[in-house]
Length: 431
Image (cartoon, rainbow, N blue to C red; front, side, top):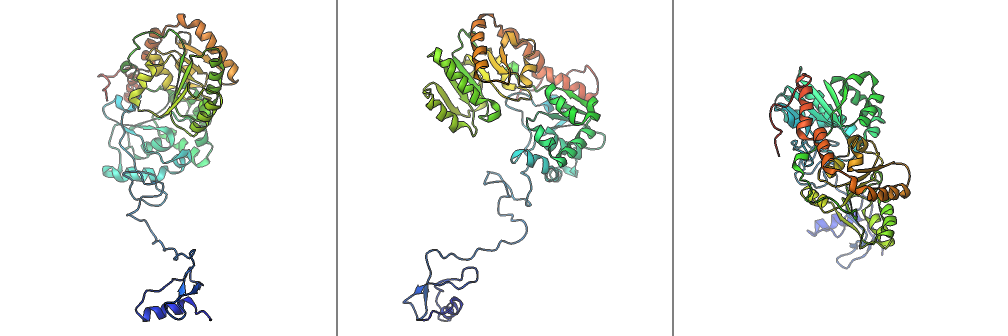
């Protein structure tokens, strides 16, 4: 029996007051099998699907904006817009520089993903902040943004005329930002408008000055503030280095593979050694499988991320912090470990050798970034031998003098007021 085209059948079904048995797929006749419901009726094949619905043009206020991925609190926005900003909050690891002065506004946008979005999406971010501000300006004498492209760009664009603008750079991905011509141009404009541009370490300042030598005079080092005063010293000093600890993301540049292999070598000589690697990252499954392959599944613990409130307990329950990163702009975890009385074994990866300068022999040991497990194992064995000579309380005092909240607040106040040697007029507020 000759089959009728689908459109003709659909029209016939509608005249009879019935629901059509099938709908055309993308406007083409849908072939099927004879159906007993009527002459020429069709039963669609299982793979037949209705045509796609056409989306209306323009923004969809009832849908989360692109990139939100169902995150709670996500709002609709124009295509390509970056997520909305969140109010700046004190960093759980220490005081944000903007808290040092009463009239300093701090900008810390919520990133979407990756340095590329940070560099290329600053204009939508600026528009979002401008729309949220009365008058479209930051009405403050001092404006302090974080990271050149994102918070820094918003700070220099929205600060009122005559305001003193400061930006702190602490990003490990700065090289990738500066490799993008558009982002590099924006970065130069940020430094040009700034009153002073802060870097958290000398190694980071060197990168910025190399890229923008004309602004060398206004690029200075002001370190991260660490709440050393709120980190209690461990009740008893470390007597043996058997419980290793790593705190951070499980990524390639953090040197976690080298850490696990070095621990495996040291574990051959000491059956009581244990390693705890706290944090999340794409290398977590690989590290778990590798530990099992080495026969160390019961001695290598990978609990994943933990709340920051548990960090001090982890520091007190461990004997040695081991961080083997290939590059760090500062190394806040190292400072926190020393402040808690925990010895450290870290790589000379930029920031850590600056933070430990002059006290590395009191706080632990450092190793070169280059090399493999041999150098780490040798440094560990030497540190075991030198353990009685360490002086963690003295190293803690140096950390507090350099990176404590009050010390960093004093530096920031001098820049905010333009008065060299100015000090904070009140104690740093505790969150």
